[in-house]
Amino acid sequence: METTIISYLAARPSRDLIVAARQQLTRTWWDDRRPDFKVYVSQLVLAEAQEGDADAAKRRADVLGGLPVLDIVPEVAELAAALVERVPLPSRAAADATHIALAAYHGMDFLITWNVAHIANAELRQRVEQVCRDLGYAPPMLCTPDELLGDTDVQT
Image (cartoon, rainbow, N blue to C red; front, side, top):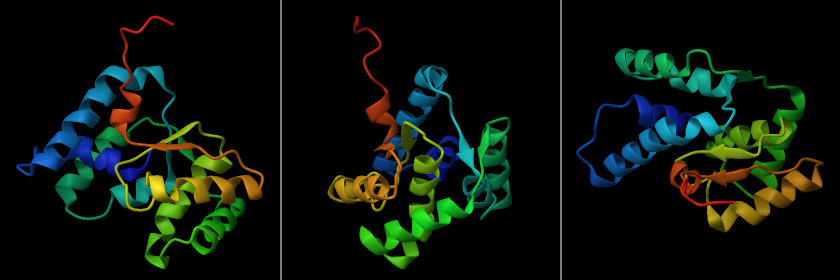
């Protein structure tokens, strides 16, 4: 799970309609579907969640409490650098590339995020997946919470 999910969960309700909708979708996923997934965060998520307003950081820390943490190892940094170079991603998106690299290195099936600029971006997805595969990693599905809400009434 990437930091934007934690931020939307912990934020005060927004008056911006798009942000409010994302907050509600995130809360619905968290309450209804999260139990269906084994959720991990990373050292990077923990660090990003501590930034900014102290009260907001405390609310984010409360959400993060008890979630298992993925370590950043040298191979993650190598994959992230390859993503920045070969996708290409702007250098300011190095942390976004690290989120993707962490999920790929640790074999995560999904990377759930609201970052649609550099992570869950349909125009970049194929290149991100190819870089991961070229370096020997199965790419995670890069998605937003609404994509993982599913239809829980569907019989399989």
